[in-house]
Length: 517
Image 1 (cartoon, one colour):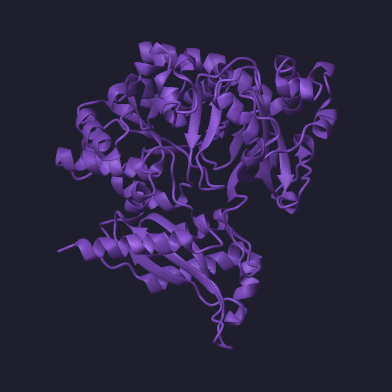
Image 2 (cartoon, rainbow, N blue to C red; image 1 turned 180 degrees about the vertical axis):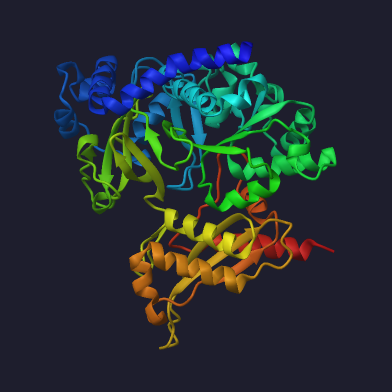
């Protein structure tokens, strides 16, 4: 069979390389850094920091500053406007546009040809190889992979004669897929790259009704919307009646725990499998290389050189990341990357913890600026995701989205305590969720997984029990639409130390209730 031959070919190209990553991680990273420095030595950045001198990793760390997006933006703006050879040789034609989660301004990340082919596409082939290796009996390549992505538009910062495009990284990847990969996916590009999401979901749902979809790939939030529409158009009870050979969901962008029960309801087939990918506008970082583990293998020869910023360095003026060889198990680190797209010692904003050092595997824990620490409780997104998943399972409900923020002390009350308010959107099938039980399990689980939270919650002396608010289905989607962030890889901030997002979501829900007859 042609699909089995293709699976064998992809495995032959990927599996030995993944084995080398596991067995020789430090050699892979040292070799990659030498390649990056050699390639960029004639750029403005390379001349400024002496890349021609072939600095060692330690010298590289001493010479080149650690930069956030805001700090690197003056150089990125030159690239965006068309100046060549600034951070990387040449003049990139593509920029991944992301709202990010570190500030409200859109980020524009260069996507060079090297980054596209040696990072995103290489990792995609690796994931394909692992999928077919894990589940050969499902013959995943005999059908279609349904992938959702964003859109792209002309770069408004660059003169027309130096034309380039900006857009969601998923749209950039799909637009330039090799022909053989494009033949394996659905829907066609003219639908996949539509920029108006309501129209996109409707037209894609109609198109894929008759396709033999065996794999899903995308962000869980938007996949839920599409699957529900497909089921409705088909007049089916669940998606297995539409796609009887559906067996795999490759998911990323948000933690899957709170969505697991929801997908079990949508796809009630015990043969359905789930594999996680860890990619962003800046690159493809890690993937799930074990079918029964949530740990993600760090990809060490995919055009990205890694350093890791310990938590006590996140807020200092001159942060000092550690190299891969010095990381420790279960400590939180922020990713610092140098890439073949010209991001040098760039702080991504994502945080991870290592679950294994041989090989190097991680779990995503959140964002450097997205956590709850208004009262010293230090609740990170990983804690929240685990607690919401536990509460969902205990109460038999499925959560579509949530956000949480502090409840501040009342200045006019000596008995006032701080706390957290959680706004949760359950699936439309849940008429009356038991918020009291949900909140109790959420609270208890947070105490189990976070000792700082547990200490503050002891006898409710410092923190009051969490306050739960349920909002109607579609509230978070409407809020994203109002922010101009509907679709693509945009997602709701889970935890913030301010109440702006939470209050805005509640306002959206109230306005929708007022508008209903």
